[in-house]
Image 1 (tube, rainbow, N blue to C red):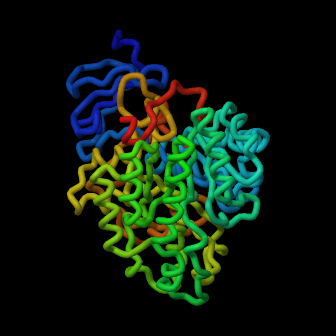
Image 2: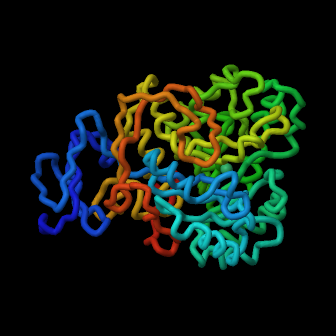
Image 3: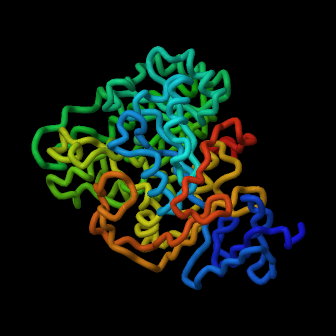
Length: 452
Ligand SMILES: [Zn+2]
């Protein structure tokens, strides 16, 4: 192409391109990357940006697990604040979960309500998951055709009455329907039969004991059995217990189409370090011990875990107080995910390019976002400048999400996102984000070892 037609060139001495760190120049026209060339290629454009020597150019991160909660629980989180937090953390695409907003995204009219709520408020691109709940099997195909990226279900009570769980018959029914149109089911996999009531009081240990690894194991086995019978493609959300990885791997080896994610908090914290009363660490499934955390890291490095996404699930500060039995379960980390994972990865010797793959290319592949997740010709020019040696101390009050609660408060994190571009435009507070639909995109290659 003619270099003179470029709108923007970003030059970086280090960039994550094709899974490795190397120098390059990225040429952008009309919001799209049109060429990736050598650092010294001399590309010309209306605007040329040279990153600072301590900055690495990354593809914008893709976070497929975000609870925005608007409308209905906008005091917990909304599109304006969530997408501001995303941009500040280098995340240029989020996919919103169907629950905690009212109505939940369980039919096409609710999806339209969501889109109306989001329109004109988003600083990054936003897509939507639908919900699979008892009685809405006939709504799944219309939602799929209306552009949701897949369907979330629970196998135990979700915490909100308007989004009930599927029982085994309901799960199988939803999976047969989803398999029929080639969709994706994403699953909160904990089994109520293995979970006790959390004891009252401030102790974390009692809460942890109430939700043992067996709860994840049993739910995942139920899911894998149904996936094998129905042929549906499934994804295990927010895996906490590394003990479930062998069962998932064995299912993949048998041809079951299954992928799995974990979250920054499971890779960052250990149960034995959580002080009593520190309910800002409460999430479900729970943060487990340090040995389990190490096993999750090994699973990631071995390719047994596909991606790392935030499960950003905020609420009001008030609902996060009390004891572990009563406090809302959810950790808000949309702005901090990359820094948190990099902080834990670096002392383990994990390369930055690997971390970035788990948080951009892999979640983009999960959702089929073919234009997202890489610095490559043809992709949207979604990028961020990340300073991996810089560090900062988290101040919950300074984060962009709505409520000043963070499990990372006062923690020093390594790696700072300094600038973010969405489709070649520096994100500066303007709501330039677009609402994405599955049908806007050419089919991406689905995630899962059996397909790669
Ligand atoms: Zn979630």
